[in-house]
Each structure stands twice: as C-alpha cells, then as structure tokens.
Image 1 (tube, one colour):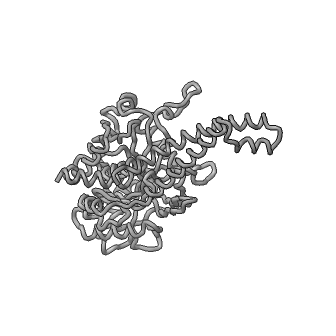
Image 2 (cartoon, rainbow, N blue to C red):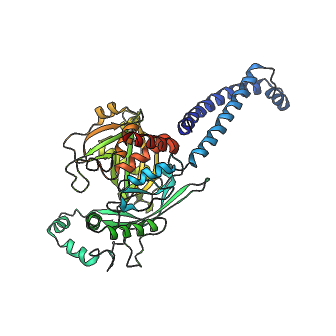
Image 3 (cartoon, rainbow, N blue to C red):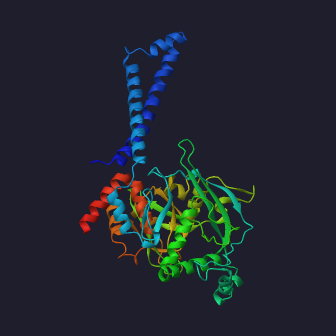
Amino acid sequence: MAFNLWNINKKLIWLENKMFGCTLAYSSGIIINLISDADSISGFAGTCFSVNKPAILIMWLLVAITAIIALTTRILHYINKHQNPSAEFNKIMKEHTDSLLGQIGQNELSWGFNKNIHRSKDPAGWLPEAFYISSYEDNLDYQFPIRNEELPDYDRSQYRLYMQTEAMQRCLRNKNNKERFAVSFIEPNYNNKDKRVELKIIKTNWTSLQFSWNYFRRLDCNNQLVANKHIEEITKKMGKAFLDNSQEGDFAINSFCLHLILETKDGEAILAKISRNKNNDYPTTWAATLGEQLEKEDFYDPHTNTTRTNFVTRWVRRALLEEFDISDEPKYGQDSEYDEIVNENSLRVLSIDMEGDIYNIAITCVVKLKLTFEDFKNSKGIWADSEESTELRACTLPEIRDILLNYPNNSALYHPSTYLRLLMFHLYKTGTSELCKAISRDSKNIA
C-alpha cells in the first residue's frame, strides 16, 4: 500500500483515547444536568433522545464519531496483525542470515546469527504480564549428555576435565560459580481473549554455561554440519519441553536472557558500546541497548515460595537500575528518578529469540524513555570505566536499515544479537508492510 497503515493505526489509537476522554467528560455533564432537571425516568429518557437541544445533539455526535474511530482502529489493527513479510523481503533476509540457521519459515524473522523462536503476531508486541512461569525446579544440576555422536566432546567427561582447569578451580574457590536459570519450556497461545506465554525454568550455573558456550562458539567455525544438526534439534524443541533429563541425547543448556531496547522520547533506538572488560560478551561491539541474564529475585518470591506474576517488568526494572544507576526511591513524596525517566507502561515483549552463536534463549523487549537521547545521555550517560558499557549513541530507522544491510561486512562492530534486535524494533515502529518496503528499497539503492 502507498501509505503506512501501522502509523495511521497508532495515530487513530491516540485519537480514540482523546475522543473517548472528551466524549465521556462532555456526556457525563449533560446527563447529570438532565437527571437533575427530569421529573421522571421516562422524562429523562425522552430528553436524552431529543435532537432539538444543541447540547444533546453534540453529545450524540461525539458518541458516534468516537464509535467510528474505535471501529476503524480495530479493523486496521486486525489488518496489521495479519500481514506477512513479502517474498522480496524474505529473500533479502535470508541473504543476511548466517547459513548456520538454515531455512527460515514464513512467519520467522532472522538476521545475522539470531532468529525468532516465537514472535508476537501483533507488531506492537505482547504485554509483559502475558508471560508467566508455570514451574521452577531448583534441585536439578544440568547434566551434559553421557555421549553424543553428533556432538563430539560435549559430554560429562569433558565437562569434568574443564572443571579441573585452574580458571574454573579459581572460580569455585572465589565462590563465583553463580546460579543461572535456563528455560526448559516455552509455549505461547494466540487466543484473542487470553494471550499467554507459558515458561518453565530450571536452575543451572555459570561454569556449565561457559563450557557450553565456548564449545558451540568453536563448533560453529569448525564443524558446520554438526552445528546445523544441533540448531535443528533446538528449534524443533522450542515449542515443547526441550530439556528432558530422561533422554541422554538432549542438549539445550541456556541462560535465559533479556535483550532490552531503549526507545528515546523522539523514537530513536539507543545503542551502547560494550566495555572491553566484558571478555565473554563481544567487548567493544555495539548492542541495542543492553542484555541482562535472569536472576532468581526477578521471578521467585522467597516469602510465598512461589513464582512472581509480571516477572518481566521486575526484570526490566532491575536491569535499568543496575545498568544506568537509576534510583527508584521516591523523592520528597514525588515520583522517583526511575518514574521520571522510564515510561514503564510502554514496555512490550516483541519476540522470543535464539542466539545462534551460543544457542541461547532471549526475549527482546522495548521500553520508551520520557527523555530525548541528549537529555538521557547527559543525565545518565555511562563513564569510560564502566564494567558494562562505555558509550551511547542514538540510531534512527534509516540508520538501522543501513546496519542491517551491511551485514556481514560490519559484523566486527556489532554484537551478534544486535541485528535481530534492531529488526524487531523497526517492525515495532513501522509494522510489517512498511518494514518490507523500506528494506527492499534500501537494498536496491545499495546494490
């Protein structure tokens, strides 16, 4: 289509909210006056439906206009939700997706080393409260397969040797083998009345993750056939329980991760340059915006011995408080610094993704700031000696497309997951149709 239905839909949603507020306020005043003037119920009803009085006529016109806008909004929203990527876009996407990820389905998005496992059918994403943890197992230690012909050296004996190295022994002596939490089950339902995403979580640890991630990073380079086999197994299991301790051949260790994109007040994505101190996470590359592994405090309430509701919001809040040293303490009875900076109501989960370089599982989220990029950078910019990041910059939609279409030539500059994060942000901002048109247009210009 020659115009952007997604942006029109978002403007209509804004207009609908404004019209609803105006209509409600005006109608309430009119009805209260009519009730006070009416002698009886029948008299009140007769006056309500009279069009001889200008005030009542205006009231019904406002109601009609609000209803028409609401209906139009829902029709456009339905159309946007059911748009699929174009054939031309799919072709470009596959050209910029590592061969490791294999075939991409019609409703999957991928770029570089990352791909969707599940994504929201609505470009606006899932509400964070749609995600819930149905079970948590903390009495399980991850056991690598006893033997697996397709993954040589990925077994318990090699893990034991790894744990005997000086680096791992030092980690144990210093009590740095922290708990990590793996997703063992992911299954969204797309019921219009109750959209939910069920997860099951189990406990693992840092040393198991390091052994696994180091193994698969080497595997990608050294044995493409085995790497492809592994990723096929994981993608098949993603809609079901993909870690089953009763089956020796299963291998799906992961550390459930949050990929959080910060959107500025003026609609730009913030990129952060990863500190050179983070040796295990592509130091000095650009990420959009931050990554944070799940902690037990995010999802588990020790007082009630149950998993928390709306754990995604808690996770995002903790990540922002720690990464940018934001305070969530109220100031003199007013809003906290966090509330002044972050529009928490805007938080959406766009997709559940696979990090193909290490076979990890992550959710990609976006939250909008109440500040422009310059204001945010000036107030909460990261210093050069930060353990996490050393520099921030803003990225517009045309710049996002330039980053995407220059992969893999720019792969040394960006974290492997940044490409898919930016693609999902573009989809969130423009909808499917406009995303496909813009990528196709820019691709031809580069060619």
